[in-house]
Amino acid sequence: MEKQIPIIYHEITLGVLLEGIALHAFDGKAPFSEKNLERIRDLKKIYHLDFDGRAGHRLRETPPPRESKAKP
Image 1: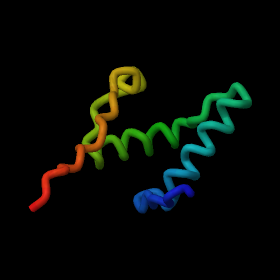
Image 2 (image 1 turned 120 degrees about the horizontal axis):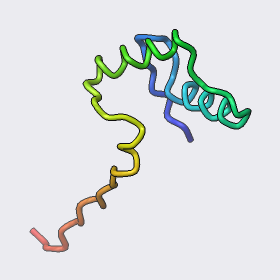
Image 3 (image 1 turned 45 degrees about the vertical axis):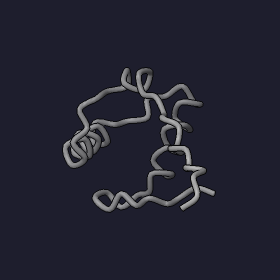
Image 4 (image 1 turned 135 degrees about the horizontal axis):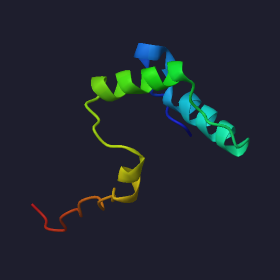
């Protein structure tokens, strides 16, 4: 089940944003208008994001920490 993470600044959820990007990509269209690109720049400032699309190829998930089997 998708978590609805509201992006209050622009009154949309992350799921809605991702759906719009995917649907435009499926149609072979650019997903972002100049107005949307300005919103993206704003969000990058708000969340202190300094990476671009190339960063996704470098990101790695870390496994969750193992629980200790030692008894107290």
